[in-house]
Length: 247
View 1 (tube, one colour):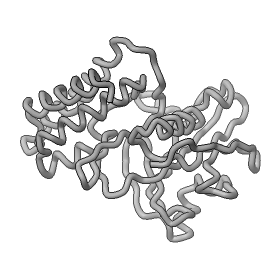
View 2 (cartoon, helix red, strand yellow):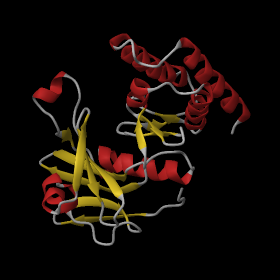
View 3 (cartoon, rainbow, N blue to C red):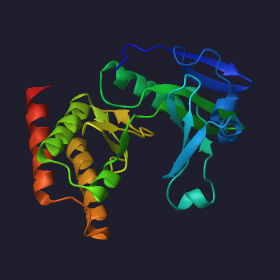
View 4 (cartoon, rainbow, N blue to C red):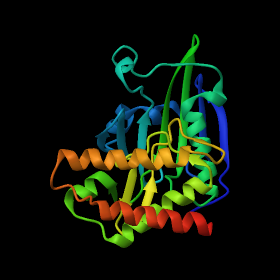
């Protein structure tokens, strides 16, 4: 994992763009347009969530993920992707790319950021983020729908979450689709929209409980979903051990 990344920032064609100049020499607003990638025959697919994630073959030949910032909840039907503009530092794509850079520098398993865009006008903005796709990975929910994970993997997941929490990382939407499992049963967290760094507190337990509720929801929806109470006990054991050891 690369560390000590440096981001560049500039207004290009009237839009504010932040990017990693190791991966991108000359960013342009077209990079955030799924249609532009499709015209280049570089759009490889998409995944539905709160917004649509487009999978593209990046400029450097590696797989990237393009995600447009969208709202959730009932308000999304009236206002799907416009946000109140209160300055660049508070815009979601800028906050997320800066946080991802910080977490990469701390060697936490998160996607490498490529670029972010903020298109602001008349007190509102729309935003987008591009990250490097985690290779050979699937959402935890999809993995458990196919096959069980060994107890050691659940312990590893608990330890991974403990590392994030020791670093003060509060993930706003810690669920079974925002945890990725790679081919070696290693774990990565994605979608840090609205996430932030916090001081120690009860939020840690609430964060873990949110993931538990998500797993329970998938288990309730399908008897074939491979999640047992013993799996959760293994996760909690891994979490406690790593958190206490400060690893």
